[in-house]
Image (cartoon, rainbow, N blue to C red):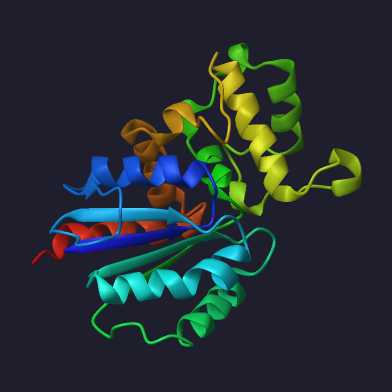
Length: 227
């Protein structure tokens, strides 16, 4: 069983997803797409959206076919678009190319963005006595420990940033209050299995950030379907 992963993000997803795959399965990462063996995966960035679809999807499908990959993941942000609408758009583009019928496809839509998943880890959220002033303000406006982070939107006029950037700023404030640093290039503990398990616990207990379930399903498929 082999896996080809095409992610939207230029940096963060290319760091986080390999760790999550490795720590939750027995797969190992390949540096190049050619000749995948059992329990190997290859990951490539589509350099943003819609570039991932317009500039990278066709070649990714060619490589999946040519090198006989068993599984194909496409990982994109929903941003502020409806998940079903974005998924339908991706599916319609996949149909333009002759993907091998035996390939198992998983389209993972991150609502709103990957940082939204990070906001769901209540185990990582500081206690009230350890909140910074910045984080207190974020929490006062919208408490992600109680309410679904994927429903948090940004008032662009008030916050001077779109929703995805606002989620990123909120997550950075949480990291900072834990005396840690989060950046796109260095997501830190976000990539670790304990952090992953914190998100998973929240999702399974509350159904918040429910789009994370697509990752759980995809991981279960490559764990249970082996050659």
